[in-house]
Length: 127
Image (cartoon, rainbow, N blue to C red):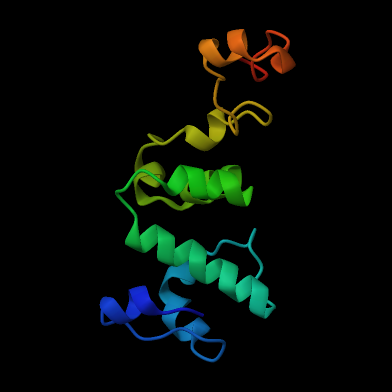
């Protein structure tokens, strides 16, 4: 795995042998079971999942990563069920409001619908 970001941050490198040690604490509380780690490919995906979450946590790109990886609902549900904020006061209802076929999409801008005949005047479902 490319570890330039971890090297810049003076963090330990991640490879197959150190994967469990590096991500052990994060996996203990927020184990993304929807991304298996039983293969090299799975370990790489989980490493990307955690690294992008840690490195870009306040950059506004997390939702789009999870959408692209097809695991937005699973991640919202995991956080919603495990978050200490939700345990005391269910204040994070995003996973309960998630609608398959709608929440993964954004509305197509009206200008695009009007100028693209292939869209036949239709927007994404639910918009």
